[in-house]
Amino acid sequence: MLIANRGEIALRVLRACKELGIQTVVVHSTADADAMHVRLADESVCIGPPPSRDSYLNIHQIVAACEITGADAVHPGYGFLSENAKFADILAAHNITFIGPSGDHIRIMGDKIEAKRTAKRLGIPVVPGSDGAVTDQKEARRIAAEIGYPVIIKASAGGGGRGMKVALTEADLEIALQTASTEAGAAFGDDAVYIEKYLEKPRHIEVQVFGDGFGRGVHFGERDCSLQRRHQKVWEEAPSPALNAEERARIGGICAKAIADLGYSGAGTIEFLYENGEFYFIEMNTRLQVEHPVTEAITGIDLVHEQIRVASGGGLSVKQEDIKFNGHAIECRINAEDPRTFTPSPGTITHFHTPGGLGIRVDSGVYSGYKIPPYYDSLIGKLIVHGRNRVECMMRLRRALDEFVVDGIKTTLPLFRDLVGNADIANGDYDIHWLEKYLAKEE
Image 1: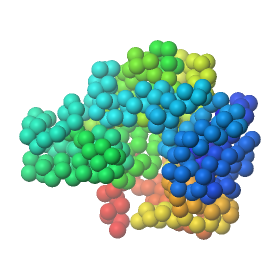
Image 2: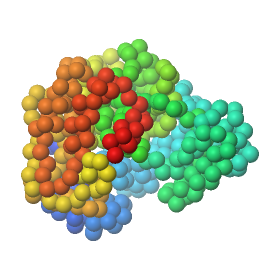
Image 3: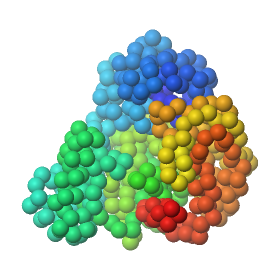
Image 4: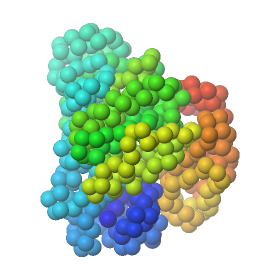
């Protein structure tokens, strides 16, 4: 198997392959020649210079690496080419297995408007809003009046907060529509936008699903990813402090049935805004998520093993009744960033010490002496903590954060040490706006 990624996720997939007895090939840019996954793989191929477009996003180089090494499957990790339908199609044309869904399913869910239509057809609850792209002010005013202000304008091809604008009143609508469309065109090459009801204090709840490609689907429960900054997740936990067992079973069942009806193959995450007891679909990610370890912690199931099994035609290893939820897990994303300004902090790690003990997992590809390159995402590691309940998990997390040492660069560890002592976080009383408000107060 060729692993078409870098950093902690490349190492995560490599470990799963070794456990399954699968020979591994990794690709890397010149900037990542000394990376941990390159050192541990059976084979490695340099595919270009540091810029992603010339290396990790270079489809032709990756396919060539498969042909040179004889790799007959590719795991894309997350980011880069993981949700690129063209990449999946090209691999299929070369008889190389893509560890993920079909190109068609990636296309459907990659277009936010088509994804919403599909979700609605599959019985997944959606946010009230336009049925498709909104093209003029008159139509926008009609839809906004119908669903009620405030509304949010979103890029059809977007993500990460780009091409998103909120209109609190009709007076705000015109400029919000124009600005969102312009940003969408610049960021994604597609200026199509749509309108949805803006929920004022929602939580971000996502459901981990798997399909076998033959009409069977299961869910592995939900994750709460409400602690975000600029629409980027910072802290994730499972199960959500906001849901009860009945709500969990209800939304999980809806999602598992939808995946089965779609004929979907592999891992996926169906994401919702949750407010006042109601779920509203926002998007589906057709790949493994950064935060998948918290689901693994509470279910005891290796999701990468499951991905490989499904892609190889082996089907799902579990039925829904086999999936049990045990305890509570929290993940903190440790980034090479200033903990207050979030400015990237590349450089050499002079000392790196990870916490240990029962219920502690650290997914990271860095080590003492490793140089953080300035070209890629700033994630350097993930701290995942599991306990018998949320209180034990929080206490264990506090202890683990105190043990975690990264010297030589700035990291977000101090932010998490603050958060773990906050009363709102301890009580699970937060929404998607909480962290940005907290950080604004701290400035």
